Image (cartoon, rainbow, N blue to C red; front, side, top):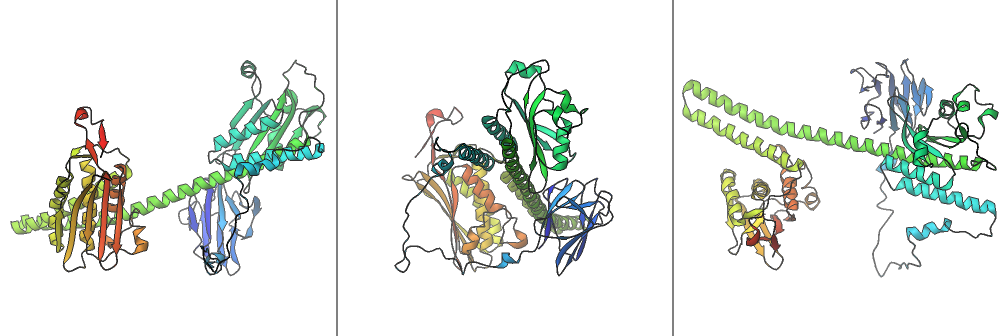
Length: 568
């Protein structure tokens, strides 16, 4: 489906599907796509779909509609077009028929077979070895070729810098370091455009002078240069401002001690994201003899190329941030929708039980009151368990290891859930190991983990007659492990579903399940240094193995917050 994805602006990270023949965009809430941007008109533009694709039509907006930086009244959108309304920048993604084409029948990954010709590796090369192709050259070769190799190495190192980080500040510092390595600049600065105000904001600056000299001078950048670079979208090189007819003699560049300067736009795929500025500086009243200029047209070309690489990296980072935000919004929406559904069902149960209690009190019928209270109490347990699962899953915590008896803990869990098992017609059996020693673990957390797994096993036996859940404990001295094994004779789990049962909100219980139980149990086991393993056969049932290290308390350190322990 075609869509508009917001990469800059107040709605950054949102994706809007174009699922109607005509959908309007604007600030008012009656638009198909509402943009929270004060520079967007109430009814700004409209996207119209037809057999030819999608067309963007401006609705006589105050600030205009732009596609790929050009103002339009009507424009046929193509995949990858950047649409700007006010300060909101969106990327248009069209219908892609190629996504439905499968290459599975055209490409095979084959293993060793007598019928398949073998492939022999002739030579291999590491990333470091590959970079040496541009790292060394013959001193006798021509100066032109030497400069070309040097420039290629600069671009190669720049490409490495921009591909190894998603931190914009770290990226810009590395770019400035590279620039100062190969050009004799005295000062430099990288400024990025603020997406909300369209103003340049300094992000990184560097000065080659001593600290005491830096404290006396301040990097003043000519507004004339910046305006020219942003307006014309091209880099400039100035060597003597008084002889350059492009500059107004009254402008700021003439009044400063700049001797040479390079300023280039950071031009990405979707527009200018900032500028890079470097200069040499001679303070007023000082004269420095030097033959020739430090900056040349070749430096300008390389600066333009470097700025473009940096701009692409910044756009990629911004796009990645927008995607992360979109995923967070989607996860938040899914969480709210799922939890709201379960809470609504619980509240309905409490409301029904409260109604029975009210009726029983009116009629002084204790049987009706007891029945109503049973319903209320049952739903109180449900909402309590839901909240506890949410808190456990959302919060990382170190287990509070205390000496405990695993058999006793499992028995407590089964006593708590035996009524539920009887109500579901499920036989619940426990086979504890006789040689279970006292171990260090967090009984409160493991109680919740085991309870969730046993409850799932009981629910899985709903269609079995009779249903049966077997719970046992194991202690392996050789492996240094303790296990709680929960086996049911339910319908079993499909192989593909086994990979997903520990994903949040993945539930096979319909309205009865929250999709939090197994993820919470897995998290608790892993916090103890263990894990949950699943074995299942369709039609025969499933086997869940909860395993943690068997940590034996050291009696000599029990008084010291159990700091000492040994793993058997």
